[in-house]
Length: 145
Image (cartoon, rainbow, N blue to C red; front, side, top):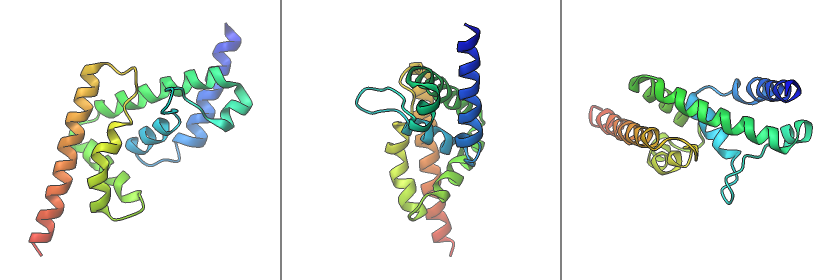
């Protein structure tokens, strides 16, 4: 039991220090963790961590971290979520407008599978509002010119 706990703690440290901390926003972290989930089966895979710690403990830690980052994002005030989303979209290749348009559907796939339905609904509602606000601000900024 203690060995299991220590392994999970070390995986969490490695994941956080080497993969999550360098990312600048909660949306980046959420997208990253979501990208470790296999779409066909829902299992989390991280080749570098699996090589060191094994498949099952890495999957458990990734699953837990994905849920934790998702919930912490939702705990942020909506305006902070908007700033975070804007920072994430600005860091992506391509135009900001194109990233905003694509964000709505893409970001829905970042929801952890085991998240409660009320959190999923809150996330989608917030995301839709933020995307609409970002689209409106770009339109307003252009018309002011």
